[in-house]
Amino acid sequence: MSVIKKFRIKNFKQKKELLRLERISLHFGKRKILEDLTFSLNQGEILGLLGPNGVGKSTIFNVIIGLLKPTYGSIHIEGKNVINEPIFSRTKRYKIGYVPQYGGYFHDLTLRENLNAISEVVIENKKLRDEKVNLLISKFELEALQNIKAEFLSGGQKKRLVISLALLSNPKILLLDEPFAALDIMTIKNLQQIIVDLQTHNNISIILCDHQARDLLSCVDLAIVLSNGKVIAKDTPNNLIRNIDAQNAYFGDSFKIN
Image (tube, rainbow, N blue to C red; front, top):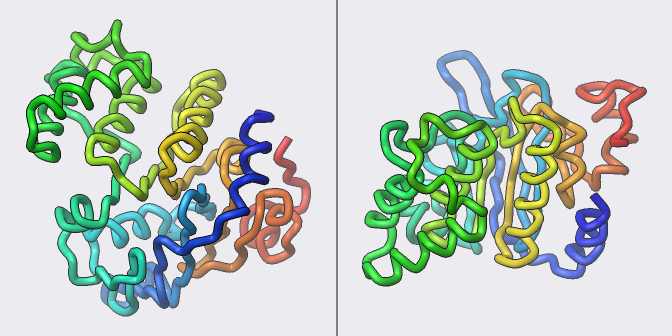
C-alpha cells in the first residue's frame, strides 16, 4: 500500500473546495436521519465516511445525487447551490458519478452492451462513445469479459463494470457506496489501487463509505466518523483512530489500521 501513503502526502498541497454539505437535516416524520450535518470535499481528495449501521452514510449519497431532498440545509458544488437541481442535472451539469453498493448494471446484457447502453445516454457523438467504451474496457482490463452477461461476472468484475459505467460521463465527483463489501482480500487491494489511480490520473474527487474500516482508511486522505446523523470527527486516518470521540462512537480503544 506504499503508493497510497505516498500520494496522500502529495494530495494536501491542493485545497480547493469542490463540494460542501451545509447544515443538512433529513427527517422522516419524527425520526431524524441526518441532523445539522456539515462537511466538505476538496478537489482531488479521497474522503471516507465511517459509522455504525443506520447512521446515514448511504442516505448522504442519496442527498448528494438528488434522490432525497433534505428537510433543511444546502448542497454546494463549486460554490453553486444545487439543492433544487434534479438527479439528471447533477449527473450531467455538475458531473457527479455514483456507484451503488448493489446492482447498477443490466443483468441480462453483456459487459460491453452495458457500457454501450449507458454511453448512448451520456455521450452524443457515436465515435466518441465507441472510443470511451474501448478505453474503459482496456483501462480496467475487461477485454476477456466484454461478451459475458453481467449476471455471470464475479463480485470484483461487477464492481469494475459499475465503476466504468459511472466514468462514462467523466465525473468530477465519484461516490462509492461500500465498494469493498463481500470482496476477497486481493480484489479489495486491486480496487483500492483503482480508486487511487482515479484520483491520481483522472483528478476525480471521491467519497466512499464502507464497513471495512481498515480497507477504507488505507486509501483515503481524510475520513469522517458519523454518529446520530452528525459529523463527530474528521481527520487523517492516523489521527482519526486516536480521536477520543471517534473511538467512543466507532473504533473503540484498540483499533489499529495495520
